[in-house]
Image (cartoon, rainbow, N blue to C red; front, side, top):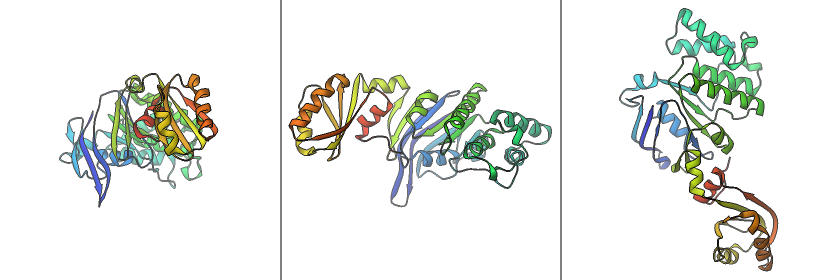
Length: 309
């Protein structure tokens, strides 16, 4: 449903997206996982036609977003990170406004608004204005405005920002319902657990570039059975890191004066010996974390840093 080839976007001398390519298939949730500033929202903005790419090609259901913008955009629904709701209009008025913007009229619009009210769980608040709503309720209305016209492709840009766990689960259920009716979803997030829970395939992006892509199992295979150990404390990194790297089965992913991150098999079994080695070298270890093979350990392996918010 979406094909991206060599997407690049510059703002002056700053390159926000550099050579990103992927294909999103019909009926799947495709995740863009990466920290804030990785280029996810810029990619979404290019796909939706809000900003023009500097180079590359974007096709939505076979329509080029630059050459055929009306045909391409007609297939899209967008739930932006920033709220796209009018707080002085009621819930129903918001939904009717966005439905009409996509061409719905008369009984079709009325029936669809009623359906969406049920999906987002705001039937009892349909006459109320969202200026008095909680963050989770506003997010649900924001979602409803993006699906009121039943789009073939739904773009979700960090849709759970600032919501409580209960509202987050409700939003997850709404995403799954969209897949159930046949939509395809592009989902951006910086939360590992969201990507693992929702996405059929995932592209990991950082600093404007795609650094890995695949199903969850395929990405985990890139990590293998190696765990990641993170130690925090006080270290002479320049002296300690080469010593650890030379040890059998240990590899330093990141090291500085306060943190060392190491990849190894059987992390729990290697931990005691590793701490002894560091103590003999004069290091002070205050905290240890062992991560089993996961998207987070893959991100650490590929970038040398933890996924930052």
